[in-house]
Image 1: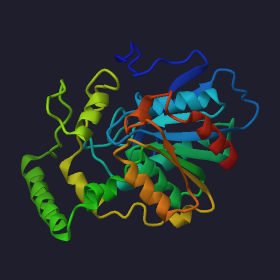
Image 2: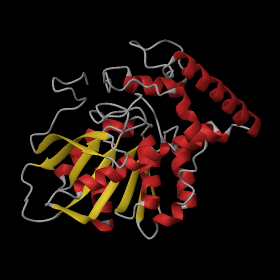
Image 3: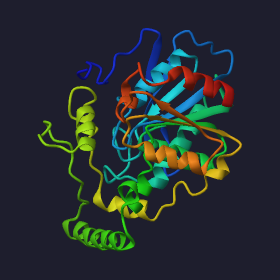
Length: 315
């Protein structure tokens, strides 16, 4: 679907209101977010609420808004946010990725929702899409105010940086990467600004590998393209991820509940499988016919009915 006149990749439902909001995380970075509510929401009573984060490199106008809108239809108050340093959120330099700060952004969303008089502070959960799935779980390990977490097409970005695709990096590979990042840091010092990874092109090239082709189908084609979702982060961000053990304390989430949604055709499924093995009390839901990117925006495939019952039962 081409970008809508309002700057979103999906059409706003007549049943839902959307309002831009701003609040700060504990580092003082201003977070740009959208607040979604059912238009008939009764403000005289307390409601469950959700913080919803985007795919790694995505923005609130894409998948998070799709999820927030659908959950708002079901009576949840939902906030979809741009991570620090990205989208319309603050933070310099631009396009940093940080395992600690991206997890903190979920807690900042909890802070904000807790200021709304019609939100029940004891019934706030999180949904993390793609890379935000790992960051949401990381946040829940230390922020017990997050009463339940659902991930969709989860990526553990820190594990990917540290161990490579499907744990393919050797120790020697990792040390070589650290040497390269150290040199890149000197290059940034000498140039006076951080270098970025390659960003998305304006057109989809030919002969892409299947995984890259799938991402380009979403981020470059009309389906999910947004000008603030550029696909590249500062190269030296990799050092923080390599040094992070973001999901090393999943047991601290218990007895709170975790729902892991993945597709039977998702190249990222192994991340959800790994978390499910580490957290056996979690629920693994495999969606037939779904690829990784289909869980960003395919409302006919995303199991919103199960998300609704999961949070109603768990919050």
